Every structure is written in C-alpha cells, then in structure tokens.
Length: 610
Image (cartoon, rainbow, N blue to C red; front, side, top):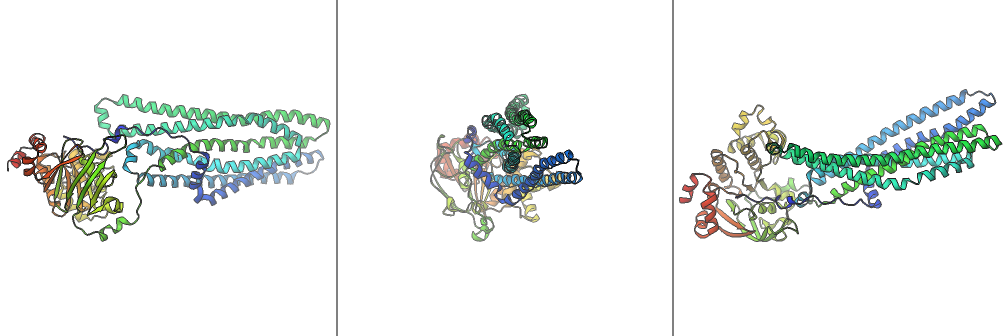
C-alpha cells in the first residue's frame, strides 16, 4: 500500500489560464515601484542624453550660418570648429548617458529578480501546487529581462525623444512655418497607423512569453524524470512537446517583430515623404523669393533630424508594449499567496522553547486541497504526548501524509485545530515552528551540490563532531569513505549519483542533524535493504527517547516499535493502540498486518507472534 502525498491531489490541475493584461494605471504603478530606488541615476542618464540631443539641435543652425558665410565669401573656420565641437560633445554626452541608463536598467532587473525570488520562495504550498515550476522560473528569468527595455526606452527615450522633437519643431517653426505645416501634415497622416499597431505588439509579446514559460515547464518535467523518459523510449515525444512550445514562442516573437518593424518603417516612410513634400514646396518658395536656400537647407537638416526623436518615441511605445506584458506576468506571480515573513523567529527559537519533545494534537481537523476536490480529512482527532514513536498506518488516500503537511503548516486546516505543545500552529511564528521539526519526505529529495551541503542543508551550523556522529548512526560513514572526494563529492542533479537507499539515509541524516523536538518520517525506510533498514530502525528508536517521532510506515518491523499506532481510513482516525491491541481489536489493522505488513521481512512474523 502507498501513502498519499500532498502533491497528489493538486497535481492533476493545469496552471491557471493566462490572465488579461494589467490596466495602464496599474502597469505604471508597478513599474514605478521598480524604478523608484533608481530615480537619481535615471534622471542623470536622461539629462546626459538630452544634452547630446540639444547639441544636435544646434547643428542645423550652424550649417545655415555656414552656407550664408560661403555665399558672401566670409571665413568659416570658427564655424567648422564650433560644429565639430558640437558633434563631439553631443556624442560623448549620449554615450555616457546610454551607459548610465543601461547600468541602471541592469540594476532594476537585479532588484526585480531578488524581489520575485524572495516572494516565490515564500509561496504557500497550494499556490505552488496550482502553478507550473517552469513557468514560475520563466517569470524570474525571461520576464525580468524584458523589464530592462521598458526602464530605459519607455521612460527615458520617451522623455528625451519628446523634448528633442518639441525643440526641433520650435526651430523649424522659426525657420519656415509653411514648410513645418507640410511636414506635420504628412507625419500625422502616416503616423496615425501607430495606434493600431501597438496593441498587437503587446498581445504578440505576451503570447511569446507564455510560450517561453511553457518551454521551461516542459524542460523541467523532462529533466526531472530523465531516466524514466529514457527507459520509456519517450525522447521523441518529449522532444515534440518541447518543440511545439518553442514554435509557439517563435510565432509570438515573429508576430511582435513584424508589428515592430512596421512601426519603425512608418517613421522612415513619414520622414521620406515629408522630405519630398518639403523639397517640392520649399523649392517653389526659394524660386519665388519667399525664402532663401540656406533656410531650406537648415530646414531639411532638421527634417532628417526628426528621424531620431520620432524613432525614440516609437521604440518607447514598442518597449512599453513588450515590457507591460512582462510586468503583467510578474505581477501575477507577485499576487500569489505567500507565507508570512517573520524576521528573527529562527534565531530566537532555541532560547524561547525548552529542548523537550513536542506534543501533537488534532482536534476535529477537516481539510481538502482545493474547493473543487473531495475532503482528505473528515474530523481527524488524536493526541500524541511528547516523546516516543507514533506510527500512522492505513490504506492509500487515508490522509496519513497530509497529517505531516498540516503540522508543518504547508497547508492550513479548513476546520478544527492542529496543536503543537498545546498551541494552535496558526499561532506559532512560522519559522520558529519549523525550527522545531525535522521532516523526511516520502521521496527523500536530495539537492544538487556536494554531500556535505545536503547533509548541512537544514542545520548549516552543525559541527564536524555532530556530523560524524550522525553519519555513523545513519550508516553513511562507509559511503563517505568510498566516495572519491568524501563529503565534498557532488551528488548530481536530485542526487542522481546516489542509490535510492542512500538518498533516504541522507535525508534522515539531514533531519537528525537539526536535533529536532519533533521528527516526521514519511515512509523514510521504504528503499532500504534489510540490513540498513534494521540499523535505521534502531536509530529512529534511539531518537524517540529524546524526540517525538511520527512515522508513516508500511513495514511491520517499523510499526511494532511504535509506542502507539494510529489507524486511518478515508480521512478519519479509525483506531489508536499498540500493535497487540490493534491486531486483537481492529479488523482493518489485522488485515493490513496479515497481508502487506507480513510480506516485508521474515522476522516480521516472529514480531507478530510475540
């Protein structure tokens, strides 16, 4: 028989459907929250960029004066020097401004990633159950990268581009109001199409980003069960699934690029048509004597100069559409429910709580993983005094592993109370509660890194002597001696270089190193051979002298060691007692003991007979 895990129920649900884009006001509010700490740097970068643009604005006037002096055969040396100085000064100012802005944009991305990662690591388990890990990872990586564009282009480029455009138009109005009217008419006529293009860029970008999240999800699924994929001959099917997501990302990217290209080409088209119109009208005015050739040349230079600020405005609008889609996805992740952050509880836990075994009590606990799923617990009641070992047994789906999830507050009970040391777990500071508990999950996960890093994961302050004692107790000392680099040996992705039994022993050692007041073992010896299982059984029995041990077990050899056994069925506590009492009084326990339990090891029959 197998235990249910907290992941079973929620895993059947796909991630929630894509959410609509954020309203413009909320998008800017979220964006401002990201850039607020960097206002001074952004202002400096914008000012330098504006200085460079202002230097460019003066150049057509200098060119006009140059043409006029050539017409009357005056010296142009000083004007050439001035023009050169303006060009160099403008280039330097824009280069420095661009560096400041790009550096600031990277800082914004870094801060956003830190904030998002900190929030994702505090997500409540139901929120994690409803999400796809790959999609959450994509929001930290790909979506935050797009924040860079909206930080520099949508804000600074829009501001400097608008200021430069207004300056250029003012100078053009002073030179030739008639030709300015021709220019504005052409640009407005062609540029009116922008309003239709920009929303399409946003939609295409959001679809592309969602597809990138799907790629991450597919890859995480495949590499998370790589041996199973290979053993099942499923490489081509998995490849096809990942390729489908990649193609969707490609289609979204191509659609966004198409509309962005159309927007940018409209700028060039508007200026080119304006040039032809101004050249025709301006030439006629020069011929009629209404204006002079120098003025026409200066006006044409300003006309071409308009390409840059208009392009900046278009790029800013495009960047906003791209960035707003990323901000919407980041905001969705930030809206997920998180656990409370209680700073300082971990440090004060040891001093505030006596180092004695913890007591556990469930009082009428009801629970379901989601409103649309059936209940897992229907009024669970039991009391476990401090110290000793309590085993939970019952058919699959009885709610045994869920007991551990509720004690750890991975999930909150819908009704009733879960008490630790007589206090409702909801009244415990979360970090302090978990600091009292050592927890070994059913699949005994091992993280990438060295063996030492895994052992010290829950107790980074453990001494070498403590580590050596736990290695001996869990029979890992022999493994350490065999490994080429001892404790510094990398264990591979998810402990792939270790056997299933070794991973379980590592997980148990990790929990014991924490010296917990409450030890939760969810079928922690299922993959051990008989020799190591017997040794670990003795280790757990030894721990039960100073710690409260709760164990979900299927082997009679483990159950018979328990001081009390809680029999669960269909989300309720059916019976509580010792092995001998339950064999005599509870038919379900007697059936389990006579069938599945007794099949585990020859010495179990002797244990039962005794």
